[in-house]
Amino acid sequence: NAGVTQTPKFQVLKTGQSMTLQCAQDMNHEYMSWYRQDPGMGLRLIHYSVGAGITDQGEVPNGYNVSRSTTEDFPLRLLSAAPSQTSVYFCASRRKTGGALTGELFFGEGSRLTVL
Amino acid sequence: AQTVTQSQPEMSVQEAETVTLSCTYDTSESNYYLFWYKQPPSRQMILVIRQEAYKQQNATENRFSVNFQKAAKSFSLKISDSQLGDTAMYFCAFMKVGYNFNKFYFGSGTKLNVKP
Image 1 (cartoon, each protein chain N blue to C red):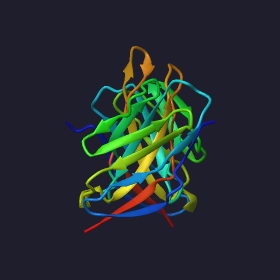
Image 2 (tube, each protein chain N blue to C red):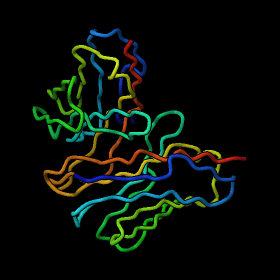
Image 3 (cartoon, rainbow over the protein chains, first blue to last red):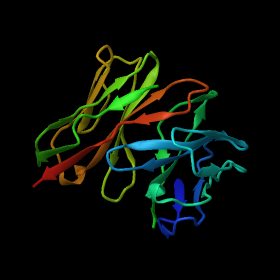
């Protein structure tokens, strides 16, 4: 019972490099999202998706791209990394019940990204 | 926009004692969910307890219980018989209910240290 799986768990980048954080869930959840966690700021929503082919921006979308080609996968792309993107990133998913998004978020284990 | 405030950045409690973590939120909605999540040093986000706003009865989960005051927009977490394994960051979260409401709002967290 894997739940939400994120890779890699740790990554160091140089300014200007690009990379993709991978997220996969095996619970058939319609909703998937990416958060970043910074000290003293809680978790802030970057992007989210309510189903394959549908994505939307959260609170802090600048510098990040997402796509959702399948129900299971929701990768987060950094096209040109900046030191301000140094953070811990969490992927989270949840189910839809009767058409409405209810229930708690299920989280991956997080990915710590450092941009030098 | 909804805001969630945790006014206690850090707290300490002796093992076996009781501690209460505070959370307030600001919303004009009447139908919503509130959550407490725990983040131990392993970084994994774990759901502790959940409260539906339409329910007057406070939620309980073993040693964890909440004091939900809807009029005051307050949602505190009480941990009884604290254990060393309760040492973690605790995040309060708010979620509107509905077909098009896709965002969780998190507080900035309270770091709880349980001392032996």
